[in-house]
Length: 452
Image (tube, rainbow, N blue to C red; front, side, top):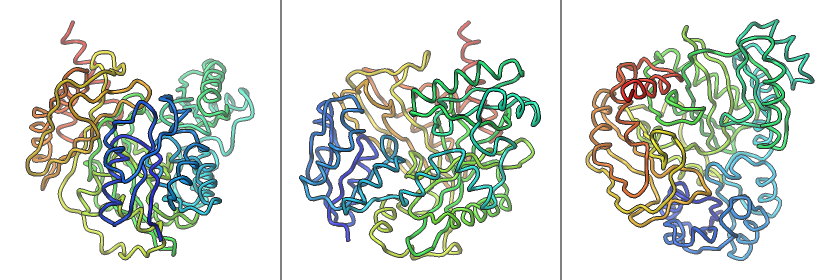
């Protein structure tokens, strides 16, 4: 039984959790830094606790402060949201060892999937295809060089404990292995506390496809289709859609079934996402598993009609999934555009006060956000302001709806990437569904050429 949830997060995802909990009749506790005292999630939660100064390490990443807040308020569950401590196995273990319910997969599964080397090994044993690469952590530069020579260039070095593009280096020539290894390892050590590296073949122009899964604590596990996440810059997603224009019904079914089979073997429960690279020949390869709710979960909600955060809470309190794979139906097309506080020219964060704000609306338009006029965008946290999600009966109508909604979206006082999204909608490859992880570079390249 869950009666009160401490939300170990901020921003739009904290508001999303507040709403889902309220619909379930569950009270919520917001935590906040001193800078977030007037934030919407603090206003709308039933209770709130200040957990420290603005820097995340002193507040939203401060496990003792979070657990103290839970004890003070009598919370009996913790929802980590995404980012911050959402994939921290130690935090999940502390929560459960204190007798609270962790709203997420078991700590041991989080730990397994958090180490990319171990995750690769586990998923290979469970039957998912991998790109050729190291079977374990690389012991030395010499081992990395020998492996690169054996599997063929280009290759990519990745941090075993990392993600989000940090601790990653592409190697196109053997003499680049040593400096790339040293740089990536040092970067990973600084970012994640571990310089452990692995290596795999680099796919030049892949598409990024992820499969959404959901399962209960009784062994029932299903997939909710895919999301296409190929529109990204420096491994940071900007646009997501479902279904993917790249997959055939056969591929979609096969990827979903194999993903469910693999996660069942490692004892997965709650919501989660398995990410794949899709090459130009339509072959897919396991990349990583995200053991949390994803930023882009609304895309799946729109095409399935399922409230994933509500389901996440319901499953955490031990309820059965209540549906089989054959009960899942996909309808229409959904696209999400992330609206970030970023300079569209330099992509640098753009903190400041929002002096004017208007959200788009109308049929088939959803905006998940936690901002308002006179809201202060802080320099301490992620630059995401809002998620603009559109839904329509097909992709063509969804694209038109997204264009219209972007034209209605007004954020004044700071810089945003709204103009980038408009340019993306003018890119023929994106409009026709023929795009990949290099498409953003093409859009920015054409913008630079026009400016010159």
